[in-house]
Image 1 (cartoon, helix red, strand yellow):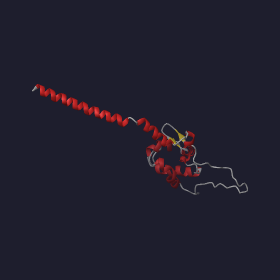
Image 2 (image 1 turned 90 degrees about the horizontal axis):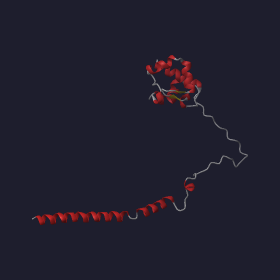
Image 3 (image 1 turned 180 degrees about the vertical axis):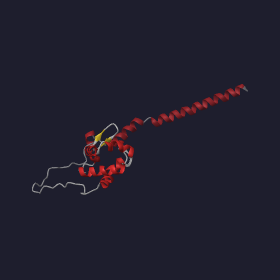
Image 4 (image 1 turned 120 degrees about the vertical axis):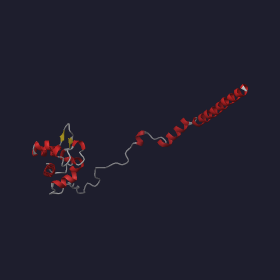
Length: 167
């Protein structure tokens, strides 16, 4: 009985060993050509004889020199903001992005607590901060709210609108 059990255990161990050897053989055979396949794939991706300079060269080129010198020079059009925009229109077009969500420390429109200390400094200080921008520990305010096309009068109108809504 003990010999039979011994024979079963040995045959199980030998069977597991054979299966393990076959698995290792298949694994090694499958991965044997991996470096060659990587080289082939890399060669196909990079193309034949292409250098780094060829792969990163610009797609197009802009020629700023005019071939026809007799042509009348192009007049540049300056995009100006529409005249007569009131504070609410300026706020909705530019300021709403930061002051509705409180981005970068911007006080939210209508939040009396956040605006009280700013309003206490006076309108001239608020105008200067809005036109020139502010970089402080509480956050950042880009000049003209990040819209350089705004006139100083439009920025002041937007400040007046915000102050009126936040008192």
